[in-house]
Image 1 (cartoon, one colour):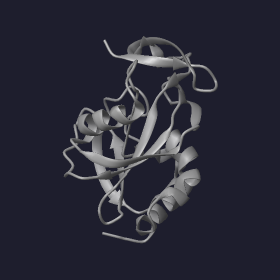
Image 2 (image 1 turned 60 degrees about the vertical axis):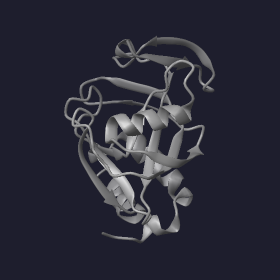
Image 3 (image 1 turned 45 degrees about the vertical axis):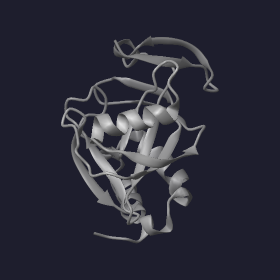
Length: 180
């Protein structure tokens, strides 16, 4: 049974709880992370969440997200989830927004309440998305993603819409102007 780390308003650990009991109509604050991935050309990866996901199915978001297990470092969790969700190996992991957190409710009523540091990592292997996690994956750049999240915020995860503007200065300059 997967466990998540419960935290207080400052991100300090206060306990653990089963993951399947955490995301509901009244969700306790817990530790999570979001990770953006850039490739060797500076392109930025976005993914569309699988329709089977419990929260925000089918919306576009950053490369991947997850929850560290009790005693697992955030960096180890980033490596683990990159492999699980995208079949991807990453390196150069940087925590760009260590204090980010959000609370949001999806259309089904499920609430997210997360202390969610945001990372940027570099892809060092090809993608092989897990269809239980990812419906689609697309390489883009920061300019295109910024325009899209402003034009249609409902098509993206609320955490991406909220944290992405704060993250723009942290990306390699090529992530803003390289197109495929």
